[in-house]
Length: 389
Image: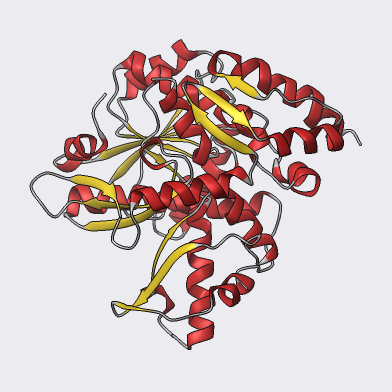
């Protein structure tokens, strides 16, 4: 498949853009609402299995946005997609030939995995085999369909995207959420400390993994890890105590499905960034987990200002080597030692914590071929007993 710059170039001259949302849970429903209210020239395909549920969810968004006078978007529902069945995904992709595919599916729907893991093992990486379960099938289907769609993965992209890449497969172009959720918190905090009224004009450059999104958002601290971050206002570096900034990032938030408004907004930001770059020649900066199949989260530039669109890591403040090292340090605390050659390696600390908290023995290494089996093991031995307590 083509590189991201070529994929963006492909949609530069198109009259309309087709976005496919795979899995219409709370993230997908919020995203559908935002896209239908955006005024962007797009058509949306919603793909899944439960037609009755999808029709209800689409209808409430369709009618609500039309009441607001914003709905100008055609929505197609395809209920013949089984995410456990790669051929059904391939057929759907071939049928609709989407320009952008958003994976918002979950192997175990209706549960915030962190509600189990954070209080027990203080690490999210334990769920990686569940997070990769469906998106690896989507990527296999994309290869089979010979699609050049731009893929956005919403499922723990910090580790999932590099895991897929390390197995030699086509991997998602973008990840959404995680590091992205910290950026607005940081802007608000700096604005409060420095008395900046137009907080949206604060420019943040940051490289860190999912673990620090959680620990900073929940607890306002960094677990003693120095952060790789620079903030600017009017082009000048802001001199600020980042410990004080991160302390202010811990703000009250719902823990139910409403929290997925942030992940849906992250997807929306990426889609808008794609369109702004490809259609309007803008230079867009995004913070992306799993960017280019790298472990952790990174600042990325989409540059549509030239004849050929280019996409690259933003190394204006930090080198790629610095960002890789910081992300390795950060994601280790999330229970992931490394990802390579199609194998995910858990940390010894996570294995010990899981044994103590859940009475289960996690494998040290999870090979790509063992993903489905390990995901089912986690459901049977950790999730189900925890839900039944």
